[in-house]
Amino acid sequence: MKPVFEIVKKSKHSKARAGLLHTAHGTIQTPVFMPVGTLATVKSLTPPQLNDCGSQIILSNTYHLSLRPGEALVQKLGGLHAFMKWDKPILTDSGGFQVFSLSKIRKVTPEGVAFQSHIDGSKQWFSPQRVIDIQRALGSDIMMPLDVCTEYPATHEKTKSDLEITLKWIKESFEYWQENPNNQLLFAIVQGGLYTDLRKHCVDTMLNYDFPGYAIGGVSVGEPKEDLENLLAFCADLLPENKPRYAMGIGLPENLSFGVEHGIDMFDCVIPTRLARHAQALTSEGKLNIRNKQFTEDQDPLDPACSCYTCTTFSRAYLRHLVMCREILGHVLMSLHNVHFLVRWVDTMRERILNE
Image (cartoon, rainbow, N blue to C red):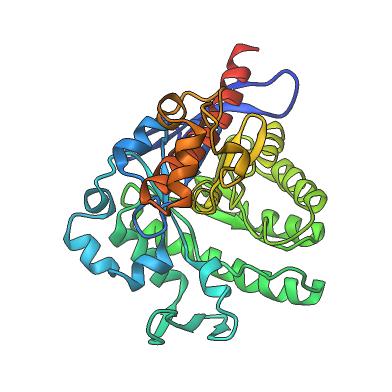
């Protein structure tokens, strides 16, 4: 039987590695950047456009899709892949981060979390089993278990208390998933805040179960860059070498480079489309705000070093015109570029590893 994850080559100069992650909807070449399609859509982009950007896998959100349109409807219409017409792999996060951002309208217990919908205030309930059931109905290739995402900053005592609940839920999620794996993978999520002793305890406990992959959660939640890097490096070193490692919510180019160099294989972030909606582009020369007056007559592409449709077709002057007039096409073209940029950023690092 083919393993879920294979390491093709390791870097001679760092802990980076190029790998293959096998899923029900295809094999993913790692390291990989995954665009976020929260509501079964990467904002403003069609599946063919995502393909043109080189996207191998996208994310959708368990919390949001359970509220609208509901997992039962998605399942009735053939699952998430058929619903959104995306035939490549999909990862669904557990919704834990979204639930725990609703600090005023949720209550956590060892059995699960009760919360109110941010849409209509209706009462909702997430348990480890319920979250797995939602993702089974959605039909994603990679599922994430319910966890407690501790806010930043937090005391050691509070973080430890949250972690004990997470570890209970992770165990229950693993056992429930094993009853019917259904060709879906389940990754564990490492929590523990900024405390290395708690992070190590979390990993040591999770290694009692044979998860197909491991994610590093609770990062990129407001901590300083130095703490983020220390945490990524520390956790990556603890995780099994023969399993994929996923840093959740990481998307800035410099953080992606650091993660890859320290042996992390998968990344996701909303940043490419979010920046696009604020007229900002990620480029080989740094971040650029297309609203700036200096681009009014600029006939250069957004990024001369980029081969995306936006950069090979349109000028900065035209993009600025679209944005200043609040034309939807401006968001589309900026999003297309930013997604392409980050996907290629990580793909290029993979190529460097293979060519060493």
